[in-house]
Length: 139
Image (tube, rainbow, N blue to C red):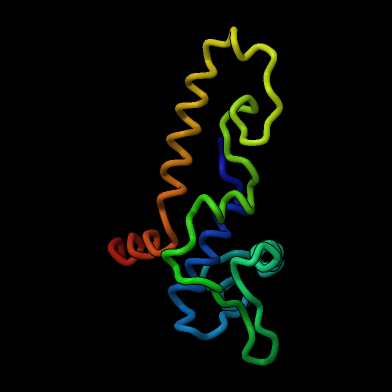
């Protein structure tokens, strides 16, 4: 399993809103400059996050984006799944995957299940607030 740039930048974008917004909308232009990410690319990410209900867009001269909930109410898993879809390491353990006809004979399926469970445990128990706290401790 590999997280794409969209998934990584979605987390970065939301952390930027959290750490720089202070209740005011954050413009894509400002995030783009701070994070060194194309504004066009951020537009795609912001569109998906807005459509999914995680952030809201504010129009106008002082417009931008705001988080819709408290940082501790967002899990990394929720954000990544919006951008990436299922994060399972193999199709046979995807949440909505089709059953594998070789599952009963497969010696690897237990490994894929353990990896899937471990990843889901970490990302579903880590919040945006946790990540922000880690960032503050590091810098």
